[in-house]
Picture 1: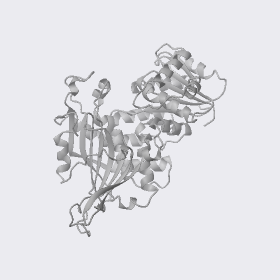
Picture 2 (picture 1 turned 90 degrees about the vertical axis):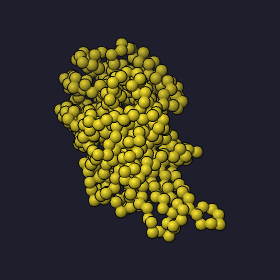
Picture 3 (picture 1 turned 30 degrees about the horizontal axis):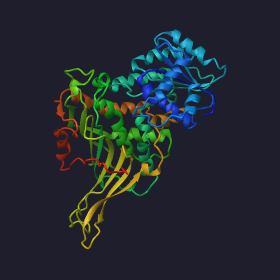
Picture 4 (picture 1 turned 45 degrees about the vertical axis):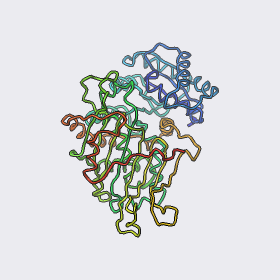
Amino acid sequence: MQESFSLVIFGATGNLAQLKLIPALYDLAEANLLPEKVSIVGIGRKELSDEEFRQYSNDVLHKPNRHHQHPIKEEVAEKLLEKMHYVSGDIGKKELYEKLDEKLKEDKSCSNRMFYLATYPELYPTVFNHLEETGLNSQKCGFVRVIIEKPIGSDLDSAKKLNQLLAEYYAEDQIYRLDHYLGRETLQNILSFRFANNLFEPMINKDHVDHIQITAAEDFGIGMRGGYYDSVGALKDVGQNHILQMIALATMEAPTSFTNQDVTDKRIKLLKELAPEMDRLVFAQYEGYLNERSVNPDSNNDTFFAFRTHINNKRFEGVPIYVRAGKALKRTVTEITIVFKKDSQHLFSHLNGGKEANMLIYRIQPNEGIVLKFSSKTPGPDFKLQDEYMQYCYRQTAVSLPDPYLRLLVDALRGDQTFFVDAEEVEAQWKFIDPLIAARSKQKLVSYKAGSFGPEEANQIIEADGRKWIEPSVSFCSF
């Protein structure tokens, strides 16, 4: 980590860099996780000097946003800004890369290099080609790695083409396909909860689990993202990646070792076993979406989806998984709920509340934690049962959760791809999602009121099986 290192950010003045990368770099600097000999080079069309780029970055750090809310230590910021440089030009022209090469050679020493493409995927072929032509991809003087952001393609075919493009220029161990959700502390903790303890894992199977529910809700609309969002929709935006990653981590088999290869192999295996159910699928749009900025007034775009799926393996045979996700819903919450089977023959099953199901809940956000719902005797002379909850809450640790970008950038520096997505995994995700996307064009889009938990049709998906959606509790880990 202390070797000479150059981080080159294409699109350094864009939205992603403002919201995520520059704040994450500050967090790395504050945590003393950046190499001492680091050079950060921003690439962009804007004509800026090094000093102007530093001032721009400083302004970004002091601008509040919902991704970066803690105070800025001026001495940390100043030390970081000193390491930041800028090269302006047209990404499509070779001259820019020649200027970049000169900039990187200024310190007259070998350095490891990481190229972060915070730019449009359509520009990837041009960038990769020019990096190759100008010798910037050479590993004679240190490693070269490249980071690209989701979405990785827009369907299975485009994802394959992008993976083929990447393979023309880089080996798989040089490619870091970043989806920030895999960097979330709460999502990664599912692995430790399941596989570092012997308490619950033996019961996560068809003999004990009745069904699984996943809710990924946001209480806000699309805001200023109309141009992007109206081109993808909710299912492509979060279903193809975040939702499938949650299902995989909650249900995959135990890896033989905690290595990138073993963990990724188990995620891929689970994704390939996941089966879409085309008759249990709903797409919806919140009322008022067509009036949002940059949205086509005739848009047939989904802002909500719900579906049922299942896993084709012996462990989860017959266990349905119900998923719902969308924008402008009742509250912002993301959680996975494992609902255990009810035992109608236990000692207290005849009592009121005696047939309530036990639940294991992974609360991904907000009020992050892990919750177990169980039955307990109500205090008093009569023998009555009531629901109680055991909670592990991150807030109790008094430790703020690291931003996912901090964790993933550190992993990329270390060469650890465990929580990045590889080519086969991306393609497995699209193979599952593509049939659902195809069904969207044939289905009638229903509407729902902003501030609800979605349309009635989503309720019918689960109620047809005699079950109900579990409304996420506002009290979990809320102290």
